[in-house]
Image (cartoon, rainbow, N blue to C red; front, side, top):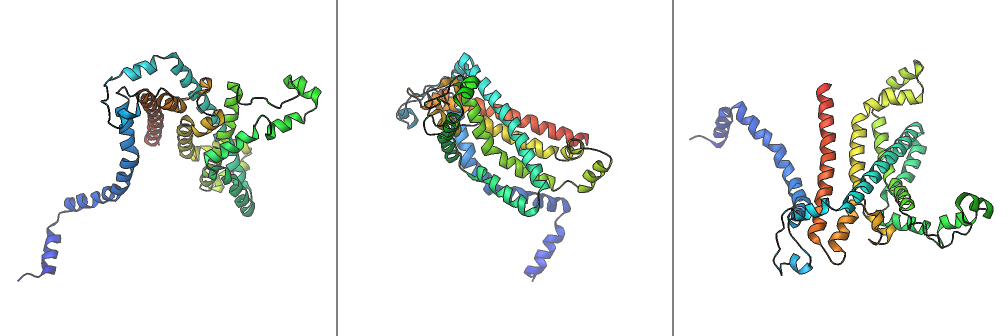
Length: 328
């Protein structure tokens, strides 16, 4: 009688290398299944619901709960949004805001990362810990603090401007008493404050990521460039930046996605959705979906358009990375 050990050995001997490779190649996919299942439940399923809702006319909570039939409108919601001149204004606000914030965040984060790389270990740890407090602060909490700083009666900025000499304040700004001044009423000033809040909250992640990348750059290359007479800017642009190009590429894409989706900071600073002149795509989608009268279909279509824009941005970056790998 053939024993179990002998049978197992014969089965292993009969297994071909190709069959063994196929069996082993399935292992990574099996390990990814739990993660994919969680992503599907928490992300893909709600996204699918939003896409589906964008093809219907939904104007009541009762419809969403199944109490009334969903009227099918096809692409009418998208045609209405894309044909609305206000949508082009909102898209312009979103793109300009995202570009300004990505540039400022990358510049400030890179400078802080370079500074941390030059500091000693203890000082770098202390500075990095202080910087990361901004990143660790929830967006809602940080925005409430900034809104208090710019409060028109008891805010720190109002107090500082009131401390300016009357003649200087009048000559520079045309007023001497800043109590009651609406810092968030002017659209340009509102976007400036919003940019300050978003950059303050975002640059620590860029700084720490750049610092991690700098640790992987061989110091011999930088030292050789300095011996050849290269200054700090030339060393960074000719040696450091090319080696960290993939890191900067990922950070630019992530910053673009985050800045396109800014919602909490704008909603809190504006005090809701009353000021349409400062709308961007995220809050525009929210306002159309939930402001009375609610239009869930239109709001969903705006959210889908925003998602498609971000997918295009990500796709362009991935294509650039693949092209650089092929050329190298």
